[in-house]
Length: 281
Image 1 (tube, rainbow, N blue to C red):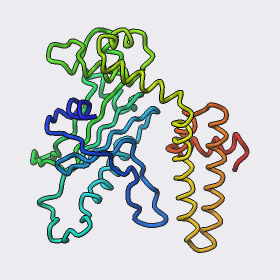
Image 2 (cartoon, rainbow, N blue to C red):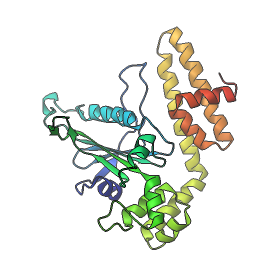
Image 3 (cartoon, one colour):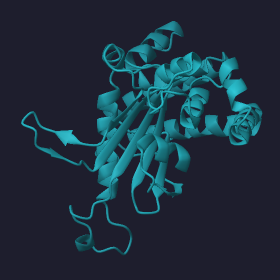
Image 4 (cartoon, helix red, strand yellow):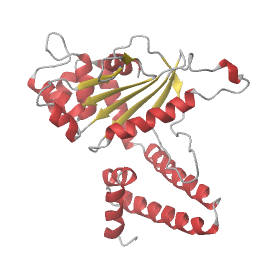
């Protein structure tokens, strides 16, 4: 994690301390919950999130704005036994979000016509008049599909010499761990081979798969419990929605349609279409 975050963000001061909760705060019972992928605390107090988007999301900028807002609110919350006066706008710690996009959205494809880079670092805010400042929320977008394509062509727009390097190989393996060209190149890296082997074994471990499923169902149960605390009218609607969603996810899992289940969590229109497909709506 240290290597990926440091290399992608170009920040050698990054030093991961521990994992962080991946559920953001809810402002009200009606607000949607935000669940990050791999959240971590750094030793200097910064909060980071590594997102992996397998399905193209043309609203990725909006998504990361919401994530950044939630993460900043967490940073602006005092800890137990900490006085409110100890925390202010001047000493508020930064947040960093890195999103790895397996399939880049349309806005990046359009930009690709004029730019060969596949890592986009948003580290500065600038007005049309030229005035700028360093925001507390830093965001980095990585186009994995474009990275993989360049790797297979033997070139690297992110390297000064234009040649494939270690970071590009790591990202290419994340993009497609089964690609033959990537696998051959990774044979020279013991670290990458160990990661590949561990990921494969985890994928075959029934206990790990059961744990992932239990986490999904626990989130559904949490949403249902929250809904039940509302008035009776809301209660019926939320309970039905929660049970329908749980039934849909179970059905997709049983059919081996894990990617569809993941997309259903994020895409409202696609989820509605699946409800109709399985007569759940």
